[in-house]
Length: 225
Ligand code: NAI
Image (cartoon, rainbow, N blue to C red):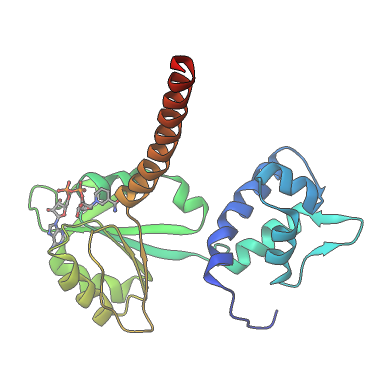
């Protein structure tokens, strides 16, 4: 496939396609039309066709999409058909929760090591992964072909650790610390902020509450009139 810049919006939607296609495979579905997929995913069929056309389509008129093939192609596009070595910086609540989640490995993300400054944590093993001293960071990164680092440390420490990671050759940072990181162009950062997601949810639930409140007021006014 020719190298083509795919929009961020499309890339952001691909994991969802991947998840639905995985479920279809589990159900034994071999092919699916964009209309059927549209009903399941609650996305328009034209959106699906447009998105998948970015990669040459994979679909055939009157046949639909070959589920297994599309699943494998999306995995290739997302790079989850390859192994990515990952480390976790900060072995506290969140760092350990990530290490304890076994499903990342199924997607090719291998947790190679965890790092912390707390002497009480150093040396402990979480699901087979040793917590090491942050002093070992650079040597470990070089010796273990580390591509991705998850940052689960306080935000005040994140910029300094990000600099060290970049200098050591890490190309991707999965940033959970609540701060924006300044990194060179050839390093990618994916920010994950559960609280921002919760604030978006709050916004939406408040709109529903406001609408309900208004409609209650209307009904009461009508009753009084
Ligand atoms: P925690 O206090 O349990 O763990 C933080 C760990 O980082 C501690 O073990 C500490 O010793 C270690 N640490 C501190 N400085 C370090 C350094 N320079 N190098 C290596 N390790 C260092 O905190 P928790 O609950 O695990 O949260 C961690 C971070 O993730 C916080 O910044 C928190 O705000 C953030 N967070 C983000 C979420 C998100 O959705 N993005 C959700 C929950 C927490």
